[in-house]
Image 1 (cartoon, rainbow over the protein chains, first blue to last red):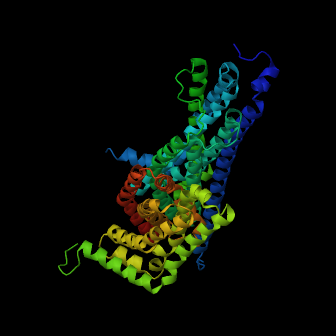
Image 2 (cartoon, rainbow over the protein chains, first blue to last red; image 1 turned 90 degrees about the horizontal axis):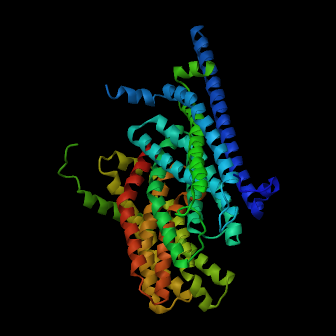
Image 3 (tube, rainbow over the protein chains, first blue to last red; image 1 turned 180 degrees about the vertical axis):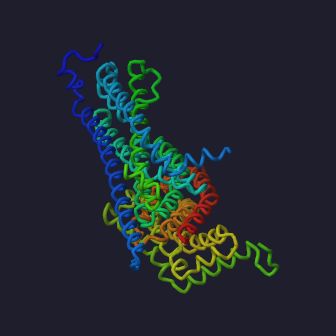
Length: 70
Length: 245
Length: 231
């Protein structure tokens, strides 16, 4: 089924190995980075929302206790 | 009413939950298809009679190029929808998509130049496709730069949407002017796509890769979209429930 | 909105705007001269950097003239909306109830008269200095005259987008130059054909087409961007 006779032949890519493998490496690095950046964005958005909610709750509590809210 | 589903669909909490639920439905098929495309393209497909095994770069180059164009269109259309109907979620889609598109434009340029070296004997030729891809990359950089220049998210959303729409009108003009310019200078063009003689053993892995990359974009978009929606809705009460769970 | 019989018509308003901008610019001559001086300096760099031989310079002249024109039109954009935005005039225009698009078209037209047209008039001079034969100079003039219309329009979009951005210079070039590439390609082609004494009507027509397209679409984008930035 395969177009390569040996594993070495597969790695060699008919002499095009120095071009084929870096191209695949770059593409999959870009894909990996995309997943990492997306996860980081979501994590940071969560952190920012949590911080903001904490501040809101503090000021709400302070207001309820009759202290001047800042 | 016909409009209730529309508002429900566009409401940030609904989008936040749906995007979270949809992520695996994009991610797993994408992973399966890309692995299948890899096996088919790198291992099973026969070598090309002219380009030998060098043409196998096509299986990552062409789907990246497709994403670079598709995502720019999505950015502009989503931005336009956000401008006209003042939909925050549409702007969030545009903001979430642009960095993904820019990264795949860069991947297209790098894989294209790696393909060019064995075929043209040089890493960079002023080939019309690579040249318009480079200009598209500059347009992505301009779009993201304009976004970053504004502190206020709402303003950044609306201003960058105007740029994206203008860019969408200009992209075909740039592309055809570059093709026209190239035809005058008889530049080299050794791209594989559009060749009518591609046998199914070569074509099927390519189509599988196209679908896999598109679904991969969908998965990353869903993840980023949740973040972008949260950034635009920090004071809403639903956020309290969304981040506690 | 009730029609005030005393109010000037849209055309008269545009003319008022045009004369106002021209008058204002005549009081600040340095703003006019600087982009032209920049254009001349960029042109001067090439004989010094490449070769003083006119026969060789002639080959690169279309590219040099057009690249210099793109860069100096970029330089002139800073003055397009900045002063009016800073002193609140632009906001008054937006609130005046008159068509903001119409007012901004007039403003862009004034900008072209003040920066594009002088550049086009100077281009044959630059071309002659780069070894372009005299017979080709009308072609140089025509291509730069038509091309700068589109440059002013795209530039106005870029200037309107970056209205609220401080020190927008680099960003402005990143936004506008990719959009201006078709102008560069068709403009340089027309000039190249003129130098070779061949008919250059086709690229000139394409340039004119770009100008018409820009004239119909760019003012809408400019008005939208100005409105968003004034909010």
